[in-house]
Image (cartoon, rainbow, N blue to C red):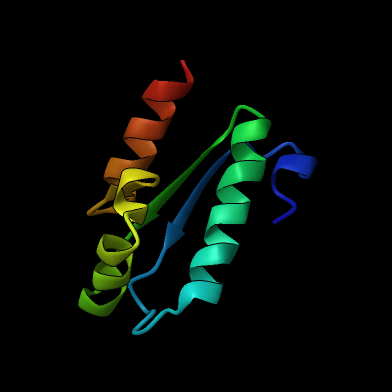
Length: 83
């Protein structure tokens, strides 16, 4: 992800159309989160389906990522955290 390098520090990823994710996909998200945090940014996730939720729970990724039910909730929380 080049968002942090481009000056974007708040990213919301909507995963509602992702039916299945493996460890490689999770690794991409983890790497993106790390880069954003190094630039004092945030990465929020929304719309995790049942299979993706199971992967996140099994890997304890739910403890690492900020996960929200809606994009609106994620936008509000990340905006408040940035202040």
